[in-house]
Length: 128
Image (cartoon, rainbow, N blue to C red; front, side):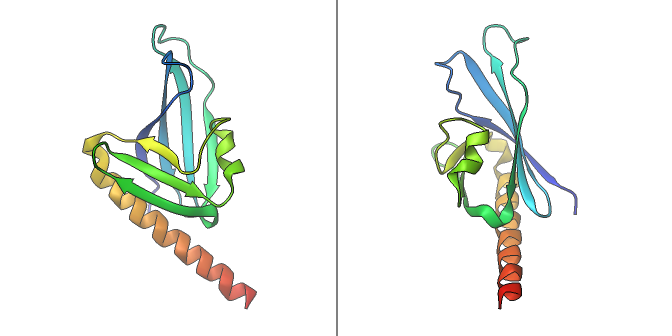
């Protein structure tokens, strides 16, 4: 199966001067979040793309909330993983979605949680 991709937005910490857009991609063994900060006034000013590789074994929870706004809540076992995206990232990381992407997001969440469970069970088999 090919990687699933979902466009997301993050809250930027630039006092309203920038927007942080990104793509959340599900691969067979990880979630990959690519983000880029863009200035609101001068659209040609862009920060470098930041890439976060999150192994599914480190995924604590992934929830889709659709009311009042569509968003994903991504929780991890180690907060240091999220610090690569934002210096003051919190657990869970809140990713905003467009309402029209909610069905794709639901599929991504279900598939990610299933793969994470399978990987954790495989790890338990090797430990025993």
